[in-house]
Picture (cartoon, rainbow, N blue to C red):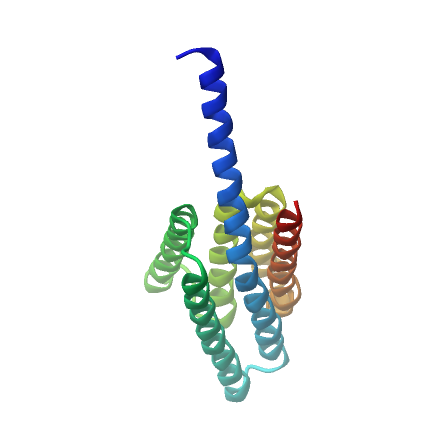
Length: 194
């Protein structure tokens, strides 16, 4: 194979990867926006009060979030098939979240961590941080850095300022999810125009 064919093949491969990245951005932005709003509201409720009502409201928000997630997924699947590239990346991210969840379950069972609202929130933050890291590998350094920020924020808040963990999760966690969704939405619109 001569040099020109190799170059042409590499360019075709780069074009395919770029198209996959554009699809990934278009498919994922709404999920980040939905969950950013839910996090911001839910953790703010919990910071205000840990009453049955606020816990119930937060659980209801989570249920609404999962329903919105499934509705978005099926709507997108019906409109255009989800690229295999996206499915594989989401599977890796999901596996990371499950791993962290099982790890925290072990910590709770072995009594390495006490079961408290703060330790459960830490589990959520670390899982979400890993999700950002995996997705950031594909979508860019900004999202990767948000994953690092979220993980550091969760660990530092848990260790040094546990009484402010919920509000930090509301503002910084919900805000970073929302910012990621808006960033991806902006990138998606910019890609469509080019």
